[in-house]
Amino acid sequence: MEDCGLVSHAAADASARSVAATAPSINDSAIAVDDVSLSYGGKGAGVLALDRISFDIPDGSFVAIVGPSGCGKSTILKILAGLLPPTSGQARLRGSPITGPRRDIGVVFQSPVLFPWRDVLANVMLPGDVQRLDKAEMRQRALDLVKLVGLSGFEHRYPRELSGGMQQRVGIIRALLHDPALLLMDEPFGALDAMTRETMNVELQRIWMERKKTVLFITHSTSEAVFLADRVIAMTPRPGRIADAFVVDLPRPRPLEVMNTPEFGAYVKRVRVALNSGGGLD
Amino acid sequence: MRRSGKFILRLLLIAAMLGLWEGCVWYFKIRAFILPPPSEVFLALYRGFANNLYPEHIGVTLMETFLGFVLGTALAFILGTFVALSRRVEYFLYPFIVMFQAMPKVALAPLIIVWFGLGLTSKVINAALVAFFPLMVNTIVGLRSAEEDRINLMRSLAASKWQIFWMLRLPNALPFIFAGLEIAMIFALIGAIVAEFIGAEKGLGMLIQSMNINVDVAGQFSILLILSAIGLVLNGIVGMTRRRLLFWDAAAQGNAAAVVEEKKL
Image (cartoon, rainbow over all chains, first blue to last red; front, side, top):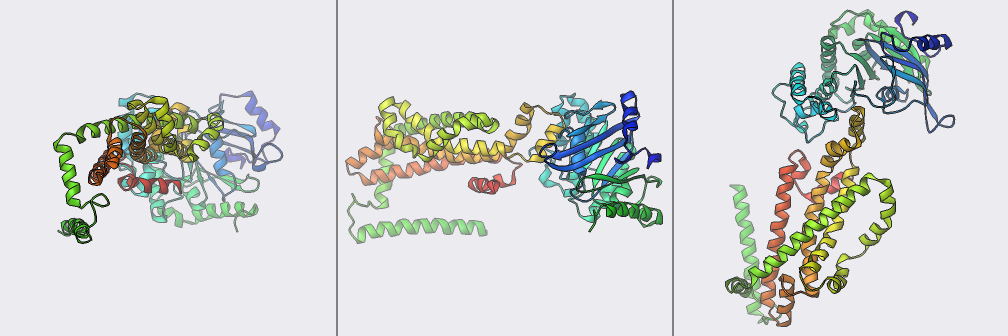
């Protein structure tokens, strides 16, 4: 656990926190989640969704949080996106505390969340419109991104004319448009069929290897987490806790066949064991 | 081929209905002040246009309807937006809205004539009053119907409230707003006609009243034909604008009322 730079809440003692306090901004972690708790319905009386979660995400790495529904994984993402303030503790992006929505974060949701009145290109350019970035530059970036995910020729199609997989690709590149420091992905392929999902996993790996963004990827699929991530965090529910965290040491680019190797199986098993220890799997 | 065949069948059915009507009137010797035959209705229609009586009154009623529609829907959109975006405004306005909505607005027409006279103003105000509510209700429902995920997306991009309104809530509300506009258009016509019934110097409603006193039933039927034609055209204009503007909304290509039902579910 220690050797991979991830600290579970059990190990996050006072000394770890004081280290962070003495060196607040000089840090090669893109994300530092420090002793974060969240209870719905107020402190004390409410339901505890997250119980003193701590972890770091190094710059440029791909981290997956895997766990069953109700383990608070989506809550962590909302906190990092600045959509939900934690009840206690702090989350920092490159040293600065996340207190609200910020412009250097891109979010991909479970559904593509496209605006049906905008065509593909205009949907991808939405972050640029909101943040009043240079139109011509954003248009060029959007066209490059559309090309990156093989949607050239569909720039002026409307969302209802696209398949589910194509729509989600638009959702992903929209989050990349304004070149955010961090990409948050909340079960982005959860609504897709198994075949499309595998294709999208390979595609996402390719995009990530090309763009080298820091990614936090939320999923309930153990194999998806192991296939995509450098580091996997397994969470168990009621209250949301980190059960295990480890590095996935498989060479990239990983082909889909990697899923048949014993190493891959061992990682998946490790996640399962961690989730079972918390009563997460039935 | 099949479509044009169906169309011809439709025309034949209408012709048969008119023929049956005409035949019944002659056969049963129904007197013209009870039910005139269609031939006399068309004759009255022709005469009304030939002696230039109808165009002036059509113009007056159209003007009242149009101004009432614009005034009523503009106010409805502004007030509906305030109510949808501010819980406080909603809290204070809610009792008034409920009270007015439960009341048949046309029942106010006699009072409005007393307050604003026999001329254009009273008709415009009555039309506006009747057209107001369908659009206000739809504006509120539409602006509030933006999906939570879409709002979260905008918020995650650090969008301002204003940007969320312009880029998300408003376009998202357009199908509802257009469904409301279509109803408001017809309601404005109703409001204008009812106000003309109560007291007017010009207009198709006034014309129906004076024909009724003169027992000119064929004339009244001819005005009814004109009114339904006006209703069809006005509705068609709003419908066409909707289909143009909401090309992205699959449901908007069909029936407006169905859009509202579907979105409310």
